[in-house]
Amino acid sequence: MSGDRVTDDPASDDLSRDREVRVLVVDDQPMIRLGLRMILDHEPDLRTVGEAGDGDVAVELARSTAPHVVLMDVRMPGTDGIEATRRLRADPALADVRVLVLTTFDDEEYVTQALRAGADGFLLKDADPASLVDAVRRVRAGGSVLDPAVTPLVLSQWRRWSAGASPAPGRAAGAAAVVGSLPERARDVLVAVARGLSNQEVADALGLTLATTKTYVHDLLRRTGCTSRTQLVVLAYEAGLVAPGEGGTAGRR
Image (cartoon, rainbow, N blue to C red):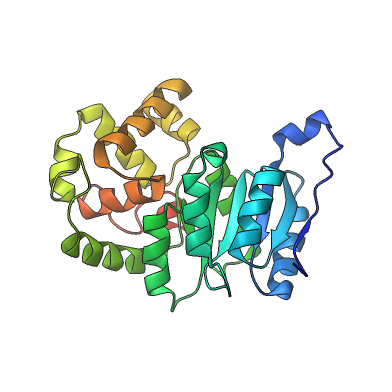
């Protein structure tokens, strides 16, 4: 499709690239893709490996370029970012790919759908370059990213969703009951995750090994029925463990 391309060099096996964060940029506006690429490629540890103008191409490129992070627009003609995120989550080969959704103030329903599809974070399109770069790095490191301006919107939509939906298998009826059933240490990890800490930062803060932290996070997802760290963040908000704007990237701009 015109405007969609791969910028990676598959023949290169430079060991220094193992430390780079590989980013796939997805947006139907060429100028926005150009701007995002310029910001990302200016950083020594970030590299765009491709760009796509619709969800179908995004999924195809994710399979061929193996990005660490997909910057995903939601409103696109054809296959939108919600369906593309859902497809990425459904592909076992792409289990390690993180999805950072780029949204606008009037994307309320899209944010809800992206959350349900398994997005790892939300960032406003008018975020400054430093916030974008920080969000990509944190998502790659396993952290949760909720733009402060998006957080109330996500929470209000989550409340509507929770009130009108049947509990998922294995989940308690409400956030408080779910959190109340967790062991104390697991709740500590949940609070740290909700404050936007990466796995390594959680480990450092709680005196755990990185492997143990990953096990706790995996177990939290299993116990709560959440499909992403972002859903864990919202669950912690709903249960009153943390408040919007309290600590970490979840409350920082």
